[in-house]
Image (cartoon, rainbow, N blue to C red; front, top):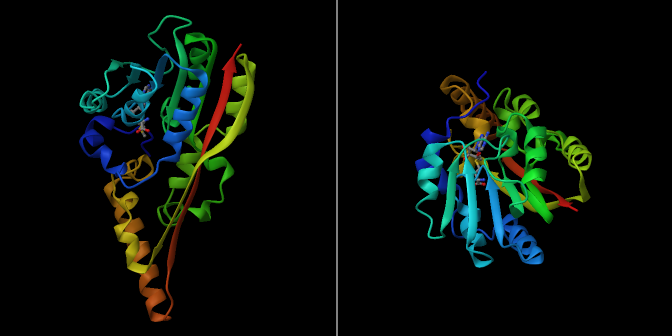
Length: 258
Ligand SMILES: C[S@@+](CC[C@H](N)C(=O)[O-])C[C@H]1O[C@@H](n2cnc3c(N)ncnc32)[C@H](O)[C@@H]1O
């Protein structure tokens, strides 16, 4: 199975995941952190379409984004904030040591391949007193039945276990690389309940909306949808209502450079 996703292909539609109606607690956590640090220079690794960097423009105009995908960088250039964008890889950051007050990534570390190299590079490019925040989902700590996508689409959960570093490893690597006051908190709890056929209105059931489903071949994706339809049929026959649950804790791993 493929484990790398072509972000150039999905870049034009990527911002559909950020409707204006959501409060985006992850963004609030980043804003609070940037304000506490009085951050003057901020880097997002795996910055995608620049959604979070644009939000941080209220704290500083010195915003840097690094991404591997030219397509995502092209979308980020459309943000109103003056983001300095570079194409590159998070495991070899193209910046001088001691440059940033805050370095963060959101929903991206599982794409970086060598997770540990990214953490070491983050330590190098941070200023003394600066902070690293790694924000995202940790499939190693969840009950897979909390996300219906894991139940109905074969191999997605197992692939996530391979792609994502465990939270425990992230904490250990951060401490080993010299970060202090390393902590883990839930930055956002996503809870969505879809009842019956309403599941097909879930934006995250689209083939390209998340890397979990986008990595599936067309056949595997369609067979997951078929399983859902069959389960719905069975529930209807038994006069039951089927509930599709998505409960995902978005964690923030935070550490400081002395
Ligand atoms: C799920 S998206 C998240 C984008 C953005 N952080 C957000 O939350 O909207 C993951 C991003 O990581 C980027 N990426 C993947 N591998 C990378 C690497 N090795 N170095 C830098 N960026 C990478 C992808 O191109 C993509 O834009």
